[in-house]
Amino acid sequence: MSKVAEAPGYIQVFSDGSVKRFAPEIATASIEPCNGYKSKDVNIDPLKPISGRIYLPDFPESGVINQQLPVLVYFHGGGFCIGSTTWLGYHLFLGDLSVASKSIILSVDYRLAPENKLPTAYEDCYSALEWLIKNLENEPWLKRADLDQVFLSGDSAGGNIVHQVAIRAIRNEDFRGRLKGLLPIHPYFGSEKRTELETANGSAGEVEMNDMFWRLSLPQGSNRDYFGCNFENAEMSVAEWSRFPAVIVFVAGSDFLKERGVKYAEFLKKNGVKRVELVEAEGQVHVYHVFHPESEATRLLQKQMSDFIHSF
Image 1 (cartoon, rainbow, N blue to C red):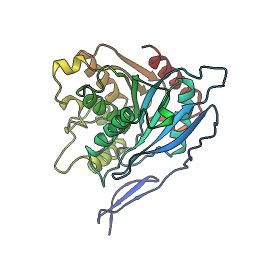
Image 2 (image 1 turned 180 degrees about the horizontal axis):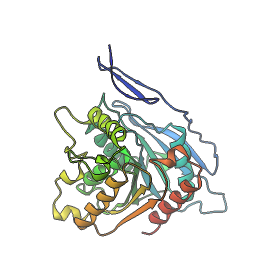
Image 3 (image 1 turned 90 degrees about the horizontal axis):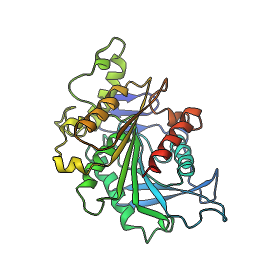
């Protein structure tokens, strides 16, 4: 049995199809308030399985106790192959974001590739959005959720998932008008045609790693022009583009994927999306908010996300 793919410290894939993942430090959910929020894990679909973690800001009794809160559904990154709601970086970032943005956050654990290739992640994350609508009355932590103020966010592969889930949502009358905005962070896209940065000297290692994750996650027989990888190949009508929600695309100045994020924002504008913003974190690396959830740059990102959410 030989190793056929590896991201050191995160995942190893072997010739017999077996996969070994290495989890970084993880955090357990706590229904006791901590740092201004509480959290708990929920089963979205135990048969698949799909699970989630809900973050609820804990307001003082004298505060906005009965106020309805916007809902942010978050999809973690990891090249569709790694990542979890339980990773400490995600837990701290999203807990603090729920406080900063006064939002209820549902972080989703979808099934991972290569065991579950695309479009499984898209289907699982769309299921989480459906679960949210259906469980408004059953889940006590959603009692204050304003389902006319729903937002989707995620980083890297999660940013890619945001786009795909939004396309499905605008085609469903249950979500029409409810999905206010998308907040992809350092979104992970690709194509068979290389970008300028991908062909530049010194980029070979980054290109190889990105290609590996795409190879592990794309359906059998697909290449990087698969609709989920190359956003230009999604089949969307003019009417559907007219219903597309507002988008704020976050990119990082020192991120190898920055070029793809900029192109994504330009593509949305070209297709008539009414509100598209592009925000760059100068000098920052890919998913810095997960590696440094309490940094000054992350605090700024949380403020920018909060301002966007409350601009509707």
